[in-house]
Image (cartoon, rainbow over all chains, first blue to last red; front, side, top):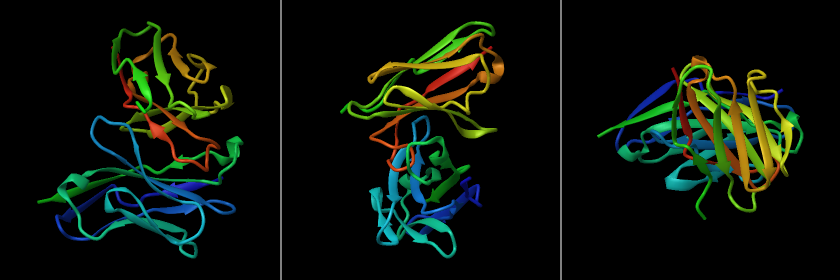
Length: 116
Length: 115
């Protein structure tokens, strides 16, 4: 069975500073990894994903994530935070495929707060 | 594309009443998901359809919940009878293919309040 952990409930960063939102995972086989963002009163919005290939994945709004197989991590990063980045961020993992065994599992979410 | 469409956006009902939530996935997507989000439990997958067939309903809380997908462009989630603990935001999402391999596109959600 797969699992995903977001160890920080909240991350606070000053505008202009780099930000990191942490995610670790556990899955048998090769993982499929995703980051989503949720703004208030909205549905989740896809940011980026890792399936295979380059360990550094670039996504929407200047975000990127680094896949680290040895540390089973997929941390979300951005070089310079904006106040508009303040939102709830979810990491998700799956094994791919059509069966219920490949169910996508979402983390508990990390609230990112960027202060001006 | 209009994205995933959900209706109603807000629903307030009394305990014991039947509630029906509706979803129209993105055209061409063959997988559809229903989620429930609460502060206490976070985001929970309720049921997953592929090509209109339910693949995994292990997240459906109990027999009071049922979901259907009569065709590729429409799905419903029904709660009968509703209870206060069903109060949550219910999201529908769709994707191009296999559950784990493709990103999901979420609708705006239906905020359900059961009094």
